[in-house]
Length: 128
Image (cartoon, rainbow, N blue to C red; front, side, top):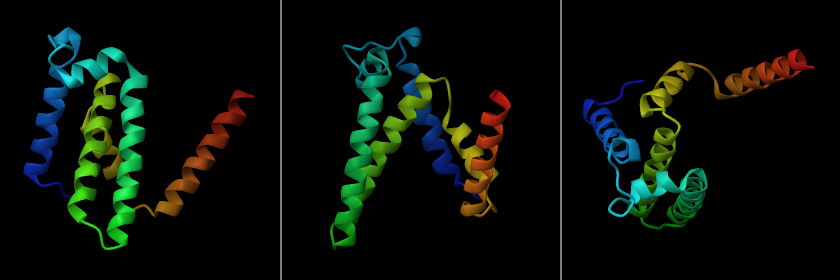
């Protein structure tokens, strides 16, 4: 999988901006939407992720019916943005997601899902 330099730089820059909005880094919830989401905690940004995911699904359905693809791109950007807020809250980075995607490259989605199920079963059995 190749990611263009500009794409990775955009994600890196956005991750840095989001990180700068944390209270410990001087973020001000009175002046920053991201700081406000982070201060309110997971319920706040997780609700937004759910809303944006639903809006992305609806936009995709509209595109399937001949609707504007730009609306889908816009909704997907909102979903990615709020997902990046969640990553930051949990001290994760977009590179963690990119590494996971790279790890899956060349693996059949069906095989990967079956492997996860098997590992989950093994984990449950070892806890019993």
